[in-house]
Length: 95
Image (cartoon, rainbow, N blue to C red; front, side, top):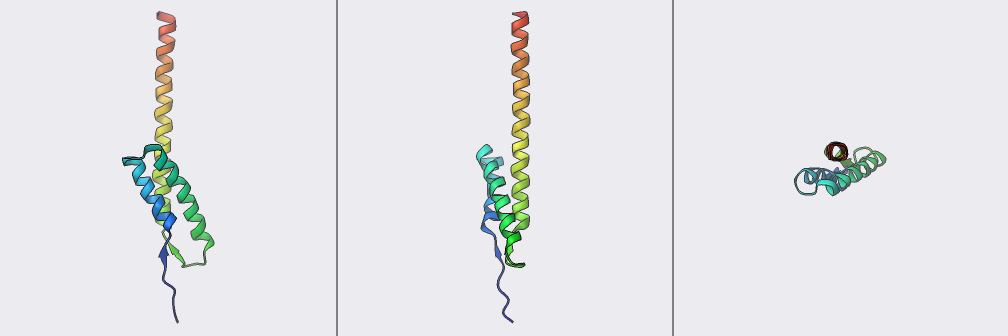
């Protein structure tokens, strides 16, 4: 019986690479790309006949890296706005 070779899903690999790059070189854009490609890869892998694609773990890792980076960016923005808001409040009332 001829068993077809399993191939690694390209989108899963791209998601992982962008997830890593979001921490090193492409802070926001890499994270967004990792999340989009990760969801696309998981959808392709699940819709394909069983055993067609490998790479679900890479897609999940890309999703985790991307979402974690986006969460940290959101937290940093909130801290920055709170800090700047506090400075503006202090300047308005004590200036």
